[in-house]
Image (cartoon, rainbow, N blue to C red):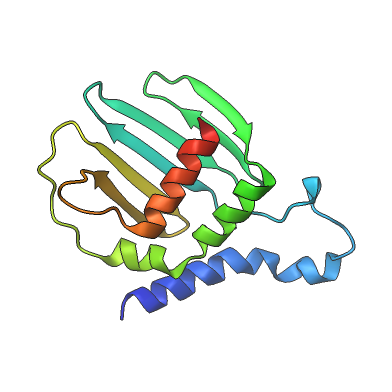
Length: 150
């Protein structure tokens, strides 16, 4: 029952900024693409043998910044196709359900942990294949952002 209000809140937060777009339909947004989400999407990958900690932040217009544990920053912009896919995944109701699910602690050593934040929703998983399958919507965003941001 908790996932429904969270999903509704997430969807409302993502769509509210688009409400005024109908009035300006003749004026395309910069770059011709609508915002991916109303809020930044943040993915943190940490762990592993070397103690990795990378954070990728994607802005509503598709610009991204990846910062590693040493503070080195890389920037870029998602392709139109990746931005469209991120839009779909960011509004996927499974994200809220995955965030609300209770996940048992992992027994994996040196595994990678992923923490994904989209608006008020934070979800994640530990990449420990023998123990559990990653939550599908969260894993899809992780795969997209990992591939698209290097």
